[in-house]
Length: 559
Ligand SMILES: *[C@@H]1O[C@H](CO)[C@@H](O)[C@H](O)[C@H]1NC(C)=O
Ligand SMILES: *[C@@H]1O[C@H](CO)[C@@H](O)[C@H](O)[C@H]1NC(C)=O
Ligand SMILES: *[C@@H]1O[C@H](CO)[C@@H](O)[C@H](O)[C@H]1NC(C)=O
Ligand SMILES: [Zn+2]
Image (cartoon, rainbow, N blue to C red; front, side, top):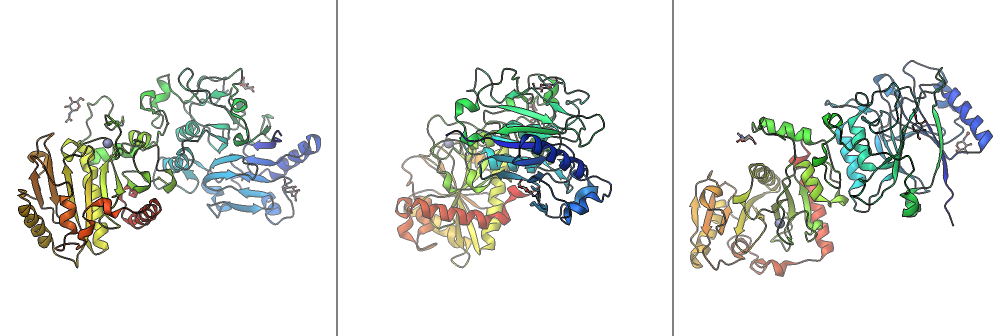
């Protein structure tokens, strides 16, 4: 049985003209039957004090239809929106909230982003920032099944929406509008996108969301900007349409291309549009389109370390991490990686727990370098690994950016474990392993001193005729090991390192054996990881626990 379409109305800036709007809605409903929802974008309230609202607020007057509105776009109207999470402002008038997704019982998905774009910190209460946009994308686009959303509501127009389209009249979309909204629309692929604030009506020709000849067909997007309620020029401010939620449609119906469909206005071919900081040039855009504008953040980070290379032709272009030659258990992008063990990913503030996937895109777009995962069959519940996202075999091969992030993780983990009364011992074995794993094993302070640990390593190495050399505290493994040479080293919490150049037959479990021995953790039966395996469920629990406890220390959340 075919799904009965929902009948919706969308409206531009109301600016306090509630009576005009609702009188009009009543007339329309009387003439052509009831609608299910009224969606208002732009300024719902006027900037000058008005008495009309009082009547709605107190219930003397009522909205004749369930009405959803966006939040404020200016300081003057901030006062009407006390609760950023959204709330009912009057009977049948609901503020959706700062940003989020509204899914109706019908299955209709409406994504909303309130306010105007702000590129400055702190972000005023009537604005959104790149973080808001990134977190919406994260929330929605990070599942492989993601196809798009039914409706996107924003107050500002997306910048460049006029590209390849029919005329947007007096509005120059290369100058006005929000580039963040364009980037959001690109990723969210709404079937309808409504905006306002420009006091004009513009229905753009529908645009496609796929690249012809390269990607399979997807649904088209209709962008509709609406004028302000009761404008003297009688520009259209109310738009009626019917829609079946996309999740209830069959694919063939959904992806039917309208005859007048155009190229995607945000996907650049013209030079002009790629000037926008948030709009990446096509070569920067990975297939999954996670183009967060954290480029900006990264740019800042780079210059603060003084490594900005001004002569570089693409200074902001994220570098793709190295790819493995075959399957790899530790490359974050590989299907083999045990994602449920991942507890933290570098330089990324917006990764909700359920979306640890599509890392390849993430890492290339955000220039992430490392991640943190629980060790499988760890010596303890908080035994973790620092791993590069890209395929690097050893510390020796790492680029400066990756080293920088490894060091950050080390320092953070030291602080984290210290707060839990533990010191951490690190080791790496570049021998019979393909992907760098920096083992981080916390040892309770009460258990033994750093010197005890050092002695245990040296003694047990001697017993097995392993030559363990003390290397100067601040020296770099890179200076000691030749690229390609096999080695093992331990780093103590003091920064001291013990290094062994592996010639042949190095015992693979050596590091674990020493730490598990009576002298240190005294859990000798755990020296082989295979004897420490637990169920996937238990692993998930441990990872969840670790993520939660690590969060206050997480440098990737710092601004
Ligand atoms: C509120 O909205 C509902 C659903 O659109 C409608 O049936 C109802 O009549 C409205 N309330 C008033 C007081 O008009
Ligand atoms: C642009 O195209 C849309 C969709 O076909 C149409 O409704 C609208 O009137 C057009 N606008 C102009 C200015 O031609
Ligand atoms: C900067 O980049 C240029 C061109 O890519 C390169 O030749 C040069 O060595 C770099 N300089 C530094 C300090 O990294
Ligand atoms: Zn790898």
